[in-house]
Image 1 (spheres, protein in one colour):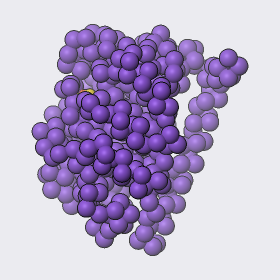
Image 2 (cartoon, rainbow, N blue to C red):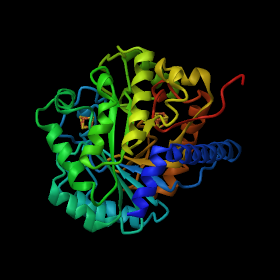
Image 3 (cartoon, rainbow, N blue to C red):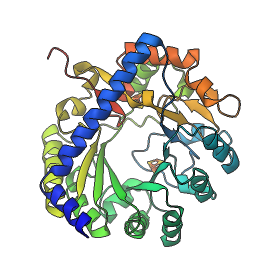
Length: 373
Ligand code: SF4
Ligand code: SF4
């Protein structure tokens, strides 16, 4: 009870924001040090975090989804035994994000989560449609789930229109309500043309469902031209990106966005809801983010240097966008793949190019201080 009151006080008076900024700037500094060490030695220690994709299948087809499901769901998926053995053999991987697609499409997802063991930190992003009260109770019983991130992009009519199916909102809301009493829930909303006007309302919605955190993410706008530049910069083929290019553009102004996000922060303080953004520096660098000018304005870093990524078939890839394959965990140990000559070449190229066009507004980007002061 006392802990809850202290949290509320910190949220209302901005203490959480300060603590979060300090934590993030510490993480970013650690990352920059890691990248510098890689530049000097060509070696990158194994990461402690991994984005592991049990599946790329999904039961929805959201307007803003950029993943090419035809390309991504072709290969076979590791079974739960293979996944369990992989984690058993890689105890250093302490922080696991199970990422999709929609991870609850896998019937054995609870077995997979159990197989990670009790001492890892597990994060589960989901569209929430398949998480009912029973599933929430099972996740509570497993005990290792640190956060469930449930996507909600607006009140019911807005959310269902974006997610392409009536009733999605109710199911996602049920997921938040069922989970929130036991497991920290972060509501995640993708900022887009269809919901920019209702973003502050989402804080109230979040609070009414019992969640205490909301994260607003910039929409990833992958056009034909941008993906062409990305492939050139990273030396990738078409199949290494597996992106559906929908030609979506930002139709709201910078000032509309700024006003909406400031209102979200104000509301968060009033309602005791922690409001965060992806990229985490969105408010401080809003102009650069809005015009996709981060790479022009800052030296950029990628948290993929401190975080592994594994596709459903066991391919070790750089990240969920730049799906360059370095090897497969069915064939070689992760340690060998992670420091292969090919992985090192790819990372060096990313550094030389100050990342790629597709990295603008990625939640895994970090910045160094601005060029020319
Ligand atoms: S729920 Fe996620 S993965 Fe599935 S279509 Fe929507 S955005 Fe894409
Ligand atoms: S910053 Fe770029 S390379 Fe790094 S995770 Fe994001 S999209 Fe991938």
